[in-house]
Structures are given as C-alpha cells and as structure tokens.
Length: 419
Image (cartoon, rainbow, N blue to C red; front, side):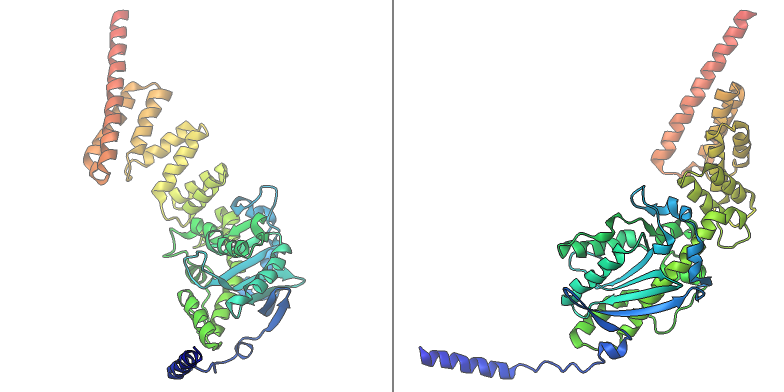
C-alpha cells in the first residue's frame, strides 16, 4: 500500500512539473496607475479616488454649482419615488456605475461606482473600486454610507440599469438597499422626451456632443470595452488600462450635473426660448401634456404649429393642440385648427369636423359633407394604412353616413308633413 501511495505521489509530482508555470504578474500596480488610496471598512478594503471641483468649475458649458440654483419644484414632474419626498439639490447624489457586463443579471458586478455630491463650496466626486471580486463588501459599505447621507439620486439610465443592479448586489450580500426610497431623477427619460426627435441618439455621448458641446479626452474608453478591461486587470494585475475607465466614469458623473441644468432650463423656460436650437416646441408640448400642464402644452403646440420655434412635427403639434382645445371646450378654435390640418397625413380632422357640425352645430348637411370628404381621403390615401385599420375606418364612416342620411330623410319628411 505504501509503495502504491509513493508511486502515485511521484506521478503527481512529474505531472505538475509538466504544467506551464503561472505567468508573473508584472503589470503596473493600481497605486501607480490611479491616484487614490485603499480604505479599510469592517468588511474589507476598497480603493477610493477623490476629486474636488470648485463651484465655478465649468463642464459642458455650465458651472457645476448652477445645479444648486435650481429649485426642487423643477424636478417634481420627473422624479420617481415616494410622493412625500422631494429631490434636494444640495444633497443629491450623482451616481454612475461601471460593470462587468452590460446585460445585468446575478453574475454582473458593479466594480467601479462613481458618486458626486456638493460639499461646502465644491462638487466632490469619489470613485469606489473593488480590486477583486472579494472586495465587493467594502465597496458596498462605502456606497451605503454615501446613499444614507443623500436626499435623492441623479443618474442616466439609472432606474433601468445602474440602480437595479446595485440593489441586487446589496440583496445578494444580504443587505437592505439603502437608496430604494430615495427620489430618483433619471436624466435619460427626461432627455428622451426633450430631444429624441431632434438628435440622432439620446446616448450620453450624443447628448454631450450635441447638447453640452463637450469633447472627451483621448484617454476615454468606449463603454462597451470596459467590462473586458476589468476582467483582464483581475487576471494580470496591470492597472495601466484602468486609467481610461476611471476617466470615463468621472466624466459621466460630471456630465450629469451639466445635463441636468440644460434639461431643466429647457423644460421650465422653453416657451420663452423659441430661438434656442435645443428647444423643440413639439417635444415641450408632449412633455407638458404628460405632466398635466395643459395650458403650457397648448401654447407649446401652438408655437410648433405656427413655426414660431424649432419643431420636429408641426402637423402633429397642431393636431394635439386641437384636441386640447376641444377638451377645454374651445370648440370654435378647435374647428379652425382642424380646417388647417386637412392636407395632413391622417383623416382625423375630417372626422372631427363631421362630429362638430353634427353634434354641436346641428348642421347635418355639413356633417354629411365632411363624412364624404373623409371617405374620399380614405379612398385616395388609405393604402398607407394597415388593412385592418382601413377596413375599420371604412365601416365607421359608412355607418356615420348612413345615420346622417337617415336623419336628413326624417327631417325632410317632417318638413313635408308640416307643410
């Protein structure tokens, strides 16, 4: 038995000698590549960088302290969270995470989390980095402290990606996510509502270029490359490529501050900024209508329809304005707008005029005329509609025409009987 054991040990020794040696990790240390320090927490250590920017620091054409001048009320229509909590600009936490994957899921880590906040007369950005997967508890410690001290989150696509991912990491670590009840301003949602019709994309890089006029340094790393850079770092410990990742994350956080200011200015003052190329009057109308500001929405749609300002869809703006006028009972003004929309891409104005003359003015002849005009539009232009919709409209208009013909016939009989 001892001889067999010795022979097996010898075979194992020889097999190990045939294995290639593990490559030496001779890359640049993290401490040399990134200016920061290791911070010890009760659960481990986390590498932390800190950058302070004075209030007058300009990023993307805006001073960072300009965000503090915005009243909390500006954000109320756009913030998600408990109705009894408002976003406090002075205690907002600007958050952006770099992750090991872009699809989320239980195996995706947030290995670098940048948080920015106003402290005294400066905007301070701290970046929490886990040098290895085992350092995640310490990163969560520091993030938890930052969240506990804040009174609101500002992110870009954070409600759909960053925060759900971070919350899942807290849950997997058997912790309660501290920021779940914080008011959350996701700038992507607001920016899409303002600029998706004007810009080729509402990605952060596109918004930096077209809205902020910002050009990043050559140091920057494309976001889709970042997960692989971190995985390589964990394997070879060469921190040199991480410089671009930290820079990317830092600029993301700073851009949130500037982008929030521009979006707030357009959303709150847009009707008086008609000459601003970033002000899409139609988009403003949609924004105001969606947040219950009906008077402002009608005014914005009117500007877009008249061409008083930049607008991406004048006809649709006029149509939406007409329906707001109808809702408010301004039927004569609505009918005037429908008359101006007749050469557009839909038959809806013809149908609204038919209803207007039948139900409000009791002019059955005019109602019949506009119904026939709608049928003619459908016959001439209906091929652009889906078949089921074309057939449904044809049936509805045919039914309306039959009803009007019936009313007109009865009226004619009644008049004849009276004579």
